Image 1 (cartoon, rainbow, N blue to C red):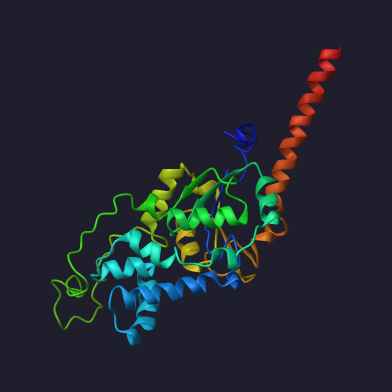
Image 2 (image 1 turned 90 degrees about the vertical axis):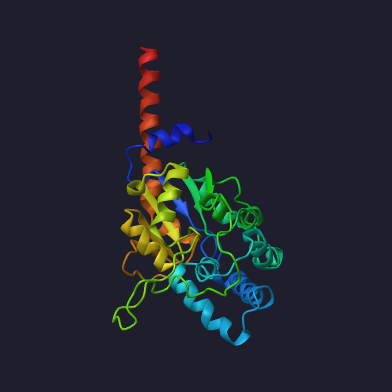
Length: 284
């Protein structure tokens, strides 16, 4: 494995893994790619799922709030569709080449750190691979955890499109109950929920207590903090609950986290001192 010896030198350091989200983290929100993705999601809901257009905007917001992704929410409330078809429509039509450019600055930053680097995204394999390739950083990561990693079976367990949306809501509860009925469970595993993080830890062999997690979503970071990860918010300099560090841009890693490079310098210093000692002994 590339950097294997350097990884070993980091075994006693504070961090031994850097875990990265992709969208609006490895590239800026201002690129407009996420806005286009949202547009494609709403079109899919209208064109493919035949949801009334006037209901879609509010529905998207609520599903995202309740389930982490619109896809997970749609499946939870009863819509049955093929995951690959959804991703093809939502991500496959994105103007990647128009919105993104190679990022040699980020590439150099990532390559300058011989610490394990892992991708953790709710998006599908093809979307993540395309972004990493365009940015020129596809060779910077040891492992990539995506939708397919977290949801390997791709089996549909909902019979038909939305007719039974309320079937799992409030089951067995008195109609006069003062508490809100429980939300129906989604078959989709995704951030910001703990089971997604647990799966990612298993897949990539991650020790959360020694991992630094970069994401643009405060909700994802708050869950990550509860899971013992160290957290970095990307896209804002304002630290909130659950956030250890806040960066306007991923390019600011070195300024915000100089200790990552200090560990490298210490390792180099120890290695150099050891080499000098060996050479001195040999000469003697």
